[in-house]
Length: 81
Image (cartoon, rainbow, N blue to C red):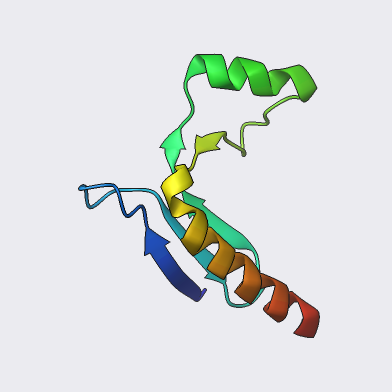
């Protein structure tokens, strides 16, 4: 699997900070983020279940620029798939 990296949270000082990629084969977005707390999960559960193979994550607003760039590339790649 090949992923195109778009960036890490610019406000984070840690190496393990939130990040965003685009999967080169599927054009899917791939996110690394902070695991949501129980209150956030409870709010999400109001609209449906969270299966064991899924998770709720927080992505900081400071990553909007990287996410926009990733979205543009994902959209372009999805057109040719």
